Length: 322
Ligand SMILES: Cc1cc2nc3c(=O)[nH]c(=O)nc-3n(C[C@H](O)[C@H](O)[C@H](O)COP(=O)(O)O)c2cc1C
Image (cartoon, rainbow, N blue to C red):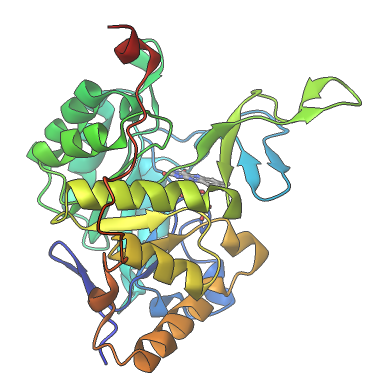
């Protein structure tokens, strides 16, 4: 049995990656286990300039997931290239995907340009859940036109595999997915965190200094599975990477059945740092038991009822009024 899988032209030794913002730049986790066993490492989002992120409190644990508003704290492009790439370059088997975050289209383009000649970088993941500072802070990823603009411009400056990471905070995920693919995205990863809040009834204050944050972990898995299924049915040829609450190999198998070719493990890294390895091994055993030759044989094989009409459309208020 082979465990390798393709995300477009990017070949991964197995379908298990680690999600941006939950694994730093890989070096610390390498003290716990050989991270070279992973399918790929996705770095923390990199911005052009270093960012110190949002004020505390910026993390809160809910009943079934984690609320965070870290605010894209990161070392910035210069320090990433100087200090973080030597370790990433030393990896022989795990692929390295650099996650990019810009405050303007120009910033995304500049970041992609700077990564183009970096041999440690095997692919780019665009985090389009960033506020567009030129357009009053609206997130790129909630608007199909802005999504197309940013992805199209980045596509022009990079030949590396380009993965676009979608925000779940939209009514029409397929519209955004299509906008990204139409201008050259090679693959899509979904989902980023779900916009949420939490309240402290003793102080009557929000639990997070910025009031809202992003929910992740087991709570969001069913939403992520639905979105993967929906996008896979609409765009069956586009490689998808499933993210959201992947904690066990069974979770990973669910995502593959819904149409993901690979998964990313995020919040689970905080609970069990070795979760990605256990998922790799568990998935491999499952494939053997099922006598499958490769994880690709699971992708999109969810048995749907014959009469099923697809995921119900979530129509926004504006559309309904017309
Ligand atoms: C503390 C924290 C920081 C994150 N930082 C980033 C980030 O910098 N860029 C990004 O694209 N996603 C970021 N994410 C989102 C994750 O990569 C992932 O999409 C999301 O958490 C859902 O997966 P999970 O439920 O497995 O955590 C972050 C998530 C957490 C929990």
